[in-house]
Image (cartoon, rainbow, N blue to C red; front, side, top):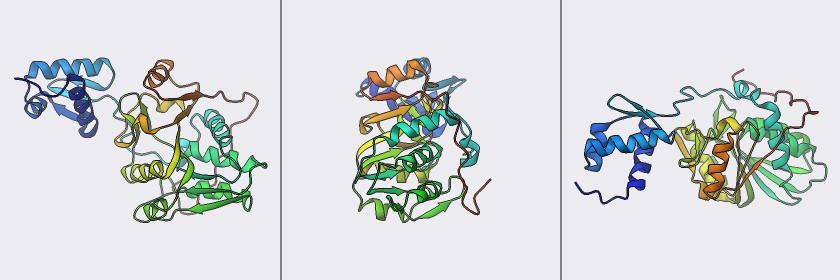
Length: 282
């Protein structure tokens, strides 16, 4: 059999299929690509060596199968808290007086909201957000900052707003920077998220901003989640912390992504938990 698709392109497609379906059989891939099962097994072996799939009898499974169940905002808040606070402070310094910012939902982006509140030098900036927790944090900075909540359907687990309303506002917005949270940052699979509705809104945020900055503590690097947000080429900067694997950071940089690793302040306590909107999961 002749394969008209370059081997690397084919393997990339195989990795994508495995990530989407969680398990794919060798026979199924052989029929799909019209190649021998020997060739497919070779491809899967190479992908397994790169950590993109896990070889099992008869096929391959997604190498990163977590989280099966999405955690609540409160469950994630305490993990890597000092690292998230440092990322938040670093990201907040990028915002300029008079600027327009899109602030995604998540515990790391909430750290950005807290840091923006402490920026007393920052005035006349506008923050668009899909996160109710972000809005509550930013309320303390009004009227120095204008805070606009996108609207949409409420997701209690993250206190976030998704379609069908969010895109109506984001389609009319042009922001200088969008700060995007995620569940996975992978050298080959890009930026991914565990929740499909939120990933849809995140993609619109990327489209609405001149500059896209992904904020993710080190535990997210090297992982692949179910829903694609963006390719690495669509991201201008990744801000992460020292828990990130140096090998993964090096591979991301090698693929052209600018990465800044920020250190937590050892003399600063981790931030207190954010107030959860009434009715949220606690």
